[in-house]
Length: 154
Image (cartoon, rainbow, N blue to C red; front, side, top):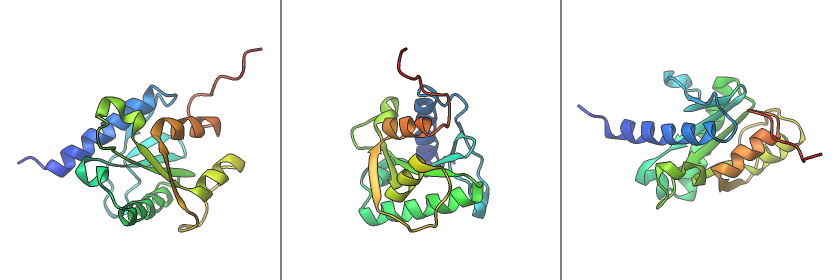
């Protein structure tokens, strides 16, 4: 018997991995399930995990559901002993081939911390913000994760 929610999740995770691999994270990969101590859905690079939500539930997620998923993402960051974690949700009208345009969610404090020095902060600190996955991946690379970004031409 086919587990439809699992298929939806696998398809969304695979789409995010493909987008990440073409945007400076060649070693991005889906993580194995670990039960109660889940470590997120995708290992982006050492120290960075992503939680991914797909399907209609993600496309139509309320603010409260996003906050719940952000708290889940923070627990998974701690379980993975990662420095950085963020949530990605599928967007209505944006298919898997354009997963780089899906929403990435963080707490504002996480972004501020990432720009200053990448160390974890206590859970529940900050305001949720949203940006495109493409922009989130760029910020993570700028902070020194994944393949180095190209500097200005000399």
